[in-house]
Image: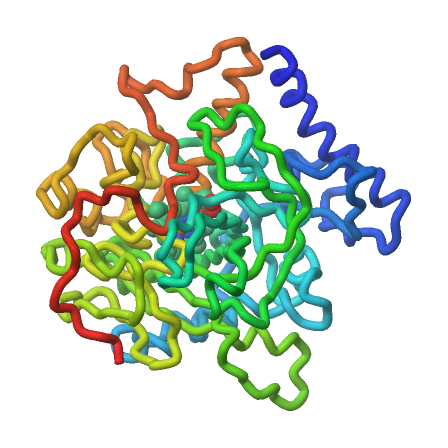
Amino acid sequence: MTGFRRRWLALPLLAVAAFGTVAATRAPAPVAAPRLPGTLPRFPDFGLLPAPEAFVPDRTFRLSQDYPKVLPPLEPALQRLLAIDYTRDWKAYAEATLAYVLAGNIENRDLQGTFFVEDNKVRPWYHVPWMHWADNGREGLHGLTPEGPIRVGSLGPQQKNIWQTYAVGFYNARGGHAIGRVWTDANRPDINALQRQGFPVGTVVAKILFTDAPVSEAPFLSNPIEWSAYIKKQFSFTPTGFPIAPRAVAPVRLIQIDIMVRDSRADATGGWVFGTFVYNGLQAKPRTPGQSFDNRWRNLMPVGLMWGQDPKVTSQLAGNPVPVKTLVNPDLKETVINSDPRLPPMHLGFGLRLNGPADNAISSCKSCHSVAEFPDISPVVPYAGSFDTRNLVCGGPEWMRWFRNEPVGQAFDAGARNFDNSLSLAMSVINFLDARSRADGGSNAVQYWQGRRQMTHGNQRGGGPDNSPCPPATGAIAAR
Ligand code: HEC
């Protein structure tokens, strides 16, 4: 135990030290994010890096953490985005958001060098701190954190094994301002900062997801966008984040890009528009003249958008867990799914609400994210796998709490603080307290709140649960 503790306490320091060594001995030196002269970063960049003798990266992940103190204005690109009626032209809204997210992050560099957001000359982006902590902490090559497993069959019938997903999320300047309000004092996060208003309108969040699934088990990943990342050798999950699973530098392939936009037109259904894109390397898109980025970025296809949970819809309970073609639930009015026949077969979420290929088939984007709160009283999913002892009835009243349209600013559970759909920001506070509690010699303090056992948000994001209590789907219509 002391061994672990010592190792962990040393880690933030190690991360900074390792970075220094790399910069001193290897060219090209990483581009430093602008910081006030003489100040150190307040938050560690990452928690896990391969030993120097095992792997020397060209550059390491930098946490973008100079959160704007004053709320930045709505830039013209955001004004144009927020003027698109997503109920009439959902694809234009999704594509405009993706273009906003990619701009400045992919041009004039090799694939491995994409999404070092400190290089972005178009607009700044910000990361959530305190995701470096423990076994599921950020790795040091691209800042990726592990997600839940992609269970057998969720990428289609060819998928015979469980695979891992790794992801990194980032916020635009308006979102970065809100992160900074929670973390103004690096030693005392403000858990009340997002009450009532939540994030400012015009916050855009994106998350890019990579998997170690091979192309043979997910043909739509062919011609992949690949990164080298410091990942676990296989999926593993310990509820406390200890002990540390063995890792290695290995290739991961882009599978999905998620977007979230805080849009006041969605206030009646919770305030956010969620969307997702799947990588489809089976389509050959022509390169456009003058294009400055790798053509593979054009292989991303929108899966759909959701701006509400359709709280009353309990049809198609089990969704489409092993997709051969994408099925659409015609009862859903607040989710829209792409009907393009080139879309790889998608399992989607509970009742065929929106979810991505790496997501949990009995959940939805908005369902999981609506549970962003501190403390994390409820798990993010109504059924969390075979160890879940709550035995909720699929589609029953208690189950449907995960499919409400909560008003902006309201926490999922009475007595919790609202984190307005930001699961990573809620997690940052939980991780911080966990680290403090360990450092102070207490071990479990943060896992309990008002006498209730906590379930952690991390790693509950798989391709679908084992033994789902939901019956098989019938009668949905094919997307095309
Ligand atoms: C089963 C739960 C689950 C589902 C379903 C889910 N997410 Fe998330 N999402 C998470 C967790 C947990 C995090 C934070 C930790 C991380 O990034 O690994 C997260 C992070 C994000 C982030 C980064 C900002 C943040 O809130 O931390 C975005 C953006 C995002 N998700 C969008 C989506 C979209 C869009 C969908 C649907 C296509 C979706 N998510 C589905 C659990 C889920």
